[in-house]
Image (cartoon, rainbow, N blue to C red; front, side):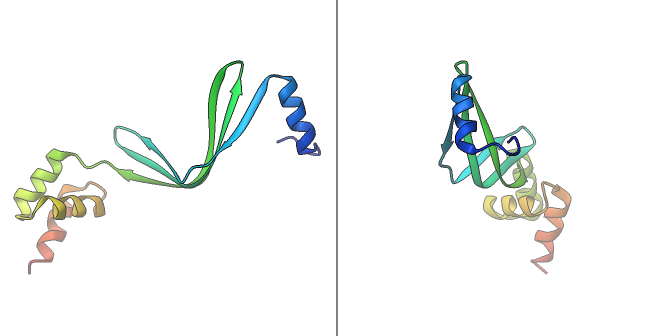
Length: 110
């Protein structure tokens, strides 16, 4: 925002320029990517409409999580002789590192 401008005046100026903004109530925003997902918790989401085009501004607590492929889960299941749930959990804890997941699962069996 611009310094020393009253929020009411700012809203009025934006309206005169054809800019509309609206707060969107949201609990969480997830951005899905090929190599992982970005999670934004406790987000402040603002929808801005300018000349008929919608854009979204998002602010909040950001965390990133790797996507675990089905092939990786199968490999860990077979190598560590565990079920799918255990294999997936181990891979997620190891940030997708197959070798680390297998080693950690093996440590629990000793």
